[in-house]
Length: 198
Image (cartoon, rainbow, N blue to C red; front, side, top):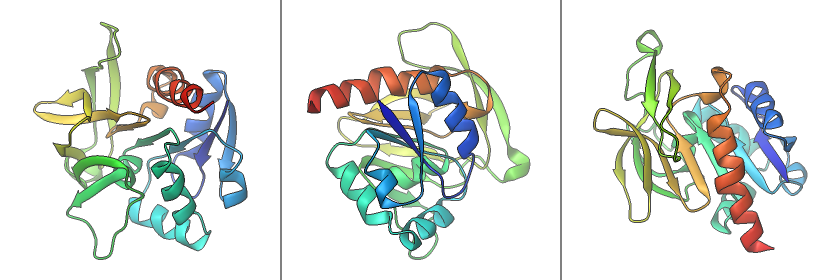
């Protein structure tokens, strides 16, 4: 299976390394031709409006939106969660998303860069072990739609969710050296979705 990393802005290298550690071939996606090569896509953290603007410039915005609508497995961390949400609170004027995930997110919900923090969370993947989560200017989920599963929370706020072939986290698992979230995406989300299509 080939997994793409949207390589326009953000922590691309860290996601690529985590995915390679999970045993998949990784393709950096900057053009529609590269998107066409992959079975699944990861959207890194970074700045959501910048990533969306660059996707428009590079001719990727519509192709990604169409692939997601057709069921391509996709995982978004932090800014990636915002880009996958159907609705954004505190959005910048004219901010667009790829959509596909029936959630409402609030940008920078945990505060500014100086408010960044780490926390040990319970992640609903069948394991009792806590997962270390790094939050940097992170969003949180204020509303989940029908069929959206909450996988982790901070207080009452969902910070990891899944809907069929879409996974999103508010935090940055690629920064911890723990590949559990990426492995969950590869094995439980992407492979299952790809096998159903074949």
